[in-house]
Figure (spheres, rainbow, N blue to C red):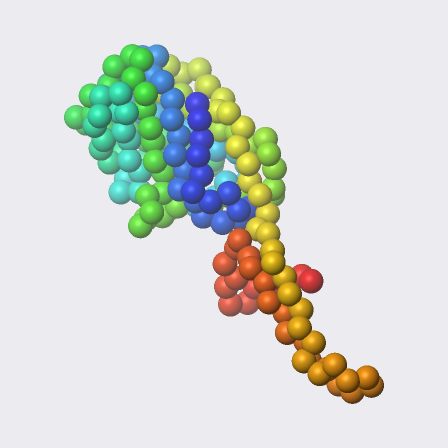
Length: 173
């Protein structure tokens, strides 16, 4: 099981792309079950329109048939009409760009994993590790406005951030 995130910043929203090879076809009425690590958020706001299931091997994709959430466990109904067979590479995109997205855990780490199984194969398979990182501030410059001894001075700080700063948020310097 592989996991790719559109955004690895801690506490921020991301599109999760999860890929795995089927051992047994879950069939119509079957489901894919994904258990995210503790601290993952916004799962309860996901709808079928936010999730796409693709048979990469067979070249077809469909919007999820049903979605339910229990804690950090997300159950995705296998879309009716999606042809799948044992050995097919399946890709599930969670949090389509224009929809609700998954909120990354707020703690950074390089060893996050998730578990996945289908209703036809109930043993969890653990994903490869993925990284959640803290937003970084880079390329900082400080400009002194009035460089006169013993007089009030103004300072101008300029920097680039990998995180969007919203109203009410701030950086510690």
